Amino acid sequence: MAKILNLQEEHLVNMIGENSITQAIFNYYPQCPRPDHVLGLKAHTDGSIITVNFADAEGLQLQKNGVWYNVPVVPNALVMNIGDIMEILSNGFFKSLVHRVVTNAEKERLSLVLVYTLELETELEPVSELVDDKRPARYMKIKLHDYMEKYHDTYATGTLAIDGVKISI
Image 1 (spheres, rainbow, N blue to C red):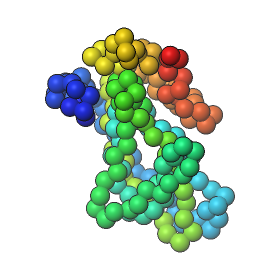
Image 2: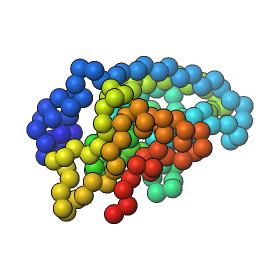
Image 3: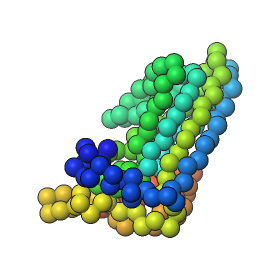
């Protein structure tokens, strides 16, 4: 990803450092007799650098231009989501996708999600090498723990935390 951004190959790895946080989350979605009335997980972005998802059944959907698309299940494959932190660090080059999980009438769904993030005291802002006169900073500087507080508050309301730190250009 650093190479795509024309940064030194190890730039992002060095930035993440040894105090990064990894969380493992197991999600179980039982069969649902009325999947048209129940979401497994409502629409959101991930408040992470990157999220790795391994799921055994359909249900993950992503939104693009207001349309929901099913993410196909490929046996033994991983789904990688760009999170809000990477969107901010990349100054908007990489986008954190809105996604959700829908329930299924015929089959239960089990997923293992690995969330990679930074130490909570990290000052979060676009990488300085990605900011210039042609592409000014698109996100304000914020401590990660403050961002995560916004993230959890906005999740409850259905809005996106990432929108709250964007700078109007």
